[in-house]
Image 1 (cartoon, each protein chain N blue to C red):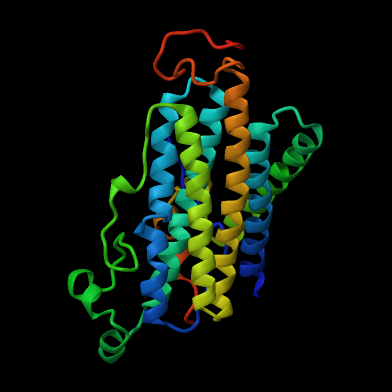
Image 2: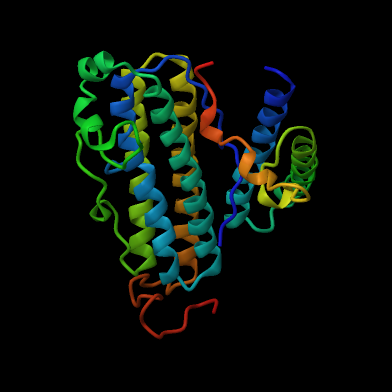
Length: 84
Length: 204
């Protein structure tokens, strides 16, 4: 894995934690440990996504640079990987 | 409202195209227990529950299913990239190819098109959640069946991830059903349909 792939992988790991915690919290809304984990990983995801969009390309429209050109449209689609 | 992230929920990086596998795996795109039916089922059922937590579970699982739909499409797309005409004919993909070239179209492995009759939205949250628990198990069985047919690690890994999520969703739907019955008449959960009858539920 190169730096870009590694960072994207890490974002996937952190976001998966958040997705799974969110479902757990949907049915256990006052679980203190889950709430604490959620706050912790949400912060990390925000930082990693910001770093990714700064170094490579935006993962969300909100992170896209739109000063000179519409950067969002030029970002690769997620199904493009493999078959190198 | 939804927003999109340009990444997959779990990485899919398939090195070798394989038209035979693609024809099997497409069932989890548009087949009877596939991700299209799953996402449409939960997202459609949301409106008939007056209980916000339960509507939240349906929304969040339905949203995750859309991410799974994209993963399955990616697997099929990567398995069918750069195929030669000979491979298309030999693998039996020719029947799909004639109508869709190598585009992604929702169908079952047997060629049956996606059909909304593969899920229900009954307007009764006990009924709907019971269906949802069965749906997660049916999808889990389908992924188990797929895993017996494939050995390629770059295809197995994302399929194993999807299989595991079915088990988690089953658990969460079970809890949502419990949250629902906790709010209903404990002597008779079926005394009224909270999505239709104008009776007051126990906890408002």
